[in-house]
Length: 345
Image (cartoon, rainbow, N blue to C red):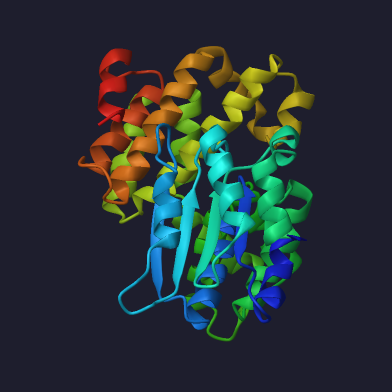
């Protein structure tokens, strides 16, 4: 069974599926879908949660063993498996199929992956999850849809904004849904009467721009390490969450890698990968400066940083973030060999 994210809420009001696959490259919508599934599972008595990160070398037998383990108090469990690469390998595929052949009523399996390409979606493990439960495919909100998406989110927050105000916010966040949601949270506090006009929206946007994540990304793409480092310090002092900054940088890295892998950087290719017209010169500048191997290494640094932020790796997230920003901006703080050692810890 395949569901769109907007269909998930109604589905979860009924009987839960034994397994769920949530896939896509839009972190906010992935997170919201997974949160909704977990909340519904908890409401249905799945009080325990076991989290697995299926990286290279992961022992898939752990998942099957946990699925078959009997709890002393017979509590029902959520088995959450995150596959960062989107490819579980032969052993992972076999384990998922084995589980789906006989899912336990005392477990709910939740698998989370990035966007799956067409060939991967035809894989046996995806088919097993799809046939046994539900697959939720998350698609990015396109530029032409952004204003409508923001308008809907504002209504859900109890805020009414006219079209001019919505357009100002849509132009500012440039497709970053997480940033849009954060701005909407600010607007909820400011809109005492529930009304926001373009003047108020412009003020909020201007106040957010002093050390914005967007400015940091622009400095990185421009190849301005000093400006990027200054902006990063400002964001830290302003109390910006490190995970928000990492999300923005990882999003740009994935876009640059996809364009480099295509072998072309024409305006049409950039547009296909969601690069807005006014940002194309910045992206082209970064593409000329950064090789594909360097971009992939930076993305691996980002994955290691994500583990540090979540307390799964012993390291200072802000120091790692500074290294990532400087290297991305063209001023590597570590040699490639030392970087590989650092991210393997």
